[in-house]
Image (tube, rainbow, N blue to C red):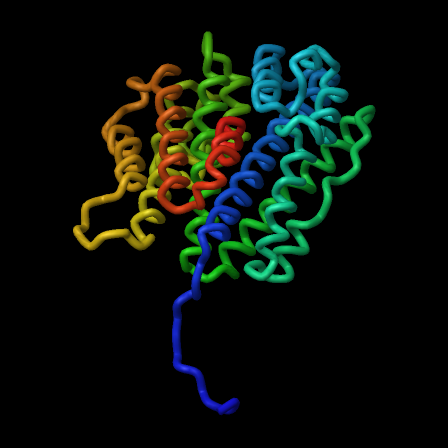
Amino acid sequence: SSGAVPAIRRGGGILSSQAADNLFWFSRYGERAEMTVRIIRSLLGSSIEVDSGTGQNSAAMDRLVSILVQWGAVPAEDAKLPITQLCGRAFAEKKMVGGVSALIGSMRGIGRSLRDRFTNDFWRTANRPVPIVDSNHAESMLKSANMLIERFSALSGLAAENMVRGPGWRFFDMGRRVERALNTCRIARRLTDGPEDRDSLGALLDLTDSQIVYRSRYLSGPMRDPVLDLVLLDPNNTRSLVYQLMAIEELIGLLPALTEDEIPERPLREARSILRPLESLTIDQIAGDELQEIETRLLGLSDAISERYFLQYEKSDRAERDNFLA
């Protein structure tokens, strides 16, 4: 009867392959957008400080600009623009897939198909457009960058507190961890390429939200080995590469297997094959070539997740996204 009490259940219901796919990519786009905004904020803050006689040197700023170019946030021909104009372009860019507006637009587009899986507060926050920026005023753009980073932090908090720890959340969090691991490899490799540069190392700490913990551990300024150990190998740093891989391994391990033979499936094997060597290395054994190899293997892990859990008629579209988001 209509008044019958339903049987108690604690599962999250059926999660379709399409929904899992969308949750995975929603968080990947969000993570890339947040890191792009963090790079823009670092550039804008430095440009303001340079005018007053402080701030990062040109080598550090050039490396940050090269990341924006490589990620498709700005075209290569704009790399020599004044910093404020370049950051304004990266903010407003919609045609190039790496622009902040384009990334947030993609995230919002995917999010509409997930509306029934998000709380009202989460979707209201996620669906806000990019703030209008004035590319002639660095202070105004810096304010907008801070506003966006606060928005992404709010989304992380809402997801952490309001999403049931079922398969949907696992794919949502897995996407964020995969993208954060890739981003960490990319910026660490680019910002430590060449002679040791304290400004570049300081930027790496800022971009990975590791500045405070570094200062609490070391009395010296940023130095290569302690910075990279914190950003890459420290399992207790929630922003480190190893932490992302530990989380990915745990998330995949909680997903159902196709068979009952208890033989790990390819996604779990791929995650473990990246993580285990890192757990036994010291930072002096890691250089740019190793980080490049880890990036490549992370892309293979993303492919393995896609092939195992997502609808394969969209494989070509997802491959294109993955290549961009690398």
